[in-house]
Length: 86
Ligand SMILES: [Zn+2]
Image: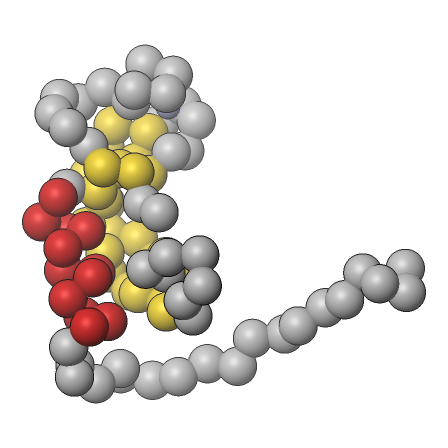
């Protein structure tokens, strides 16, 4: 789940400075849902530890995009690995 930023410009994990950015993320609704890939997601990124914080509005937009009939701009194949035989 994305980390939701309550307020302020300071990382709640390490106290570092946050910077507004647009990032790419895998997002899934819950533990049993299939993840989707999102581009150009507004986020505040910690300059120290790299933690990404999202506004409540952005989290809602991620959720509604997946629930609605909004068409993905593309689809991707992802590799699947098994560590069974390793
Ligand atoms: Zn941080």
